[in-house]
Image (cartoon, rainbow, N blue to C red; front, side, top):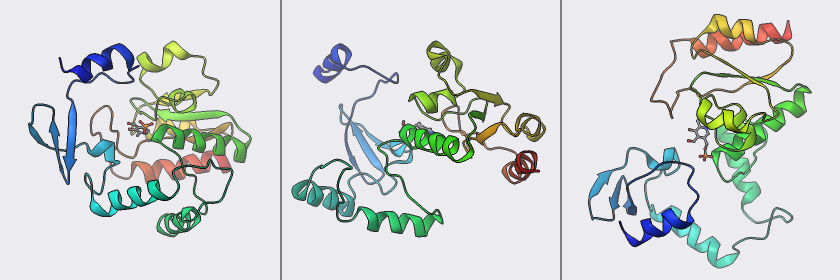
Length: 210
Ligand SMILES: Cc1ncc(COP(=O)(O)O)c(C=O)c1O
């Protein structure tokens, strides 16, 4: 076992089981601690979507770290609002919340949904995965990682992925939001039936707003 794996076992509190030690990346490739090269089809679970160590990205990170590394969200910082405006224009969404990771983004979305509807009940799908923080975990199906922490305070009903009829039966005037993966990732690359989201979106809307 490598020295860093030994330290890892002793001091690091793991969220996932893991084996390979990745030491370097460039473009679409990564190298492990034995020097073996891999085509990286994971890309940090879609985080490194410009490839590893893209010069424009590393340059921007280095420039920012040399200018101002952190000052909390208590202050305005140059570039943040400009970036939010670009994301807003690209996505069509009105405002942007900057988080550090996916589960935090989902927790923000869950809070926003509760605040804007005044409701507390959520619907998600069997085998969906939304993260490990308290809110996102409440909406994550995998029983062996969720059940030991229950009650999580956010009631969520799980229905079979792709089942429009089950969704129609589940979404009521008490439903805050339906949280879902457009393509399920953690349980495999599972694509729902054609038109599922179009059909289920309109039927769920009808259920809640009619
Ligand atoms: C669909 C989905 N949502 C949320 C998350 C949580 O993201 P993070 O691990 O960055 O908190 C994951 C993580 O794999 C995910 O696959």
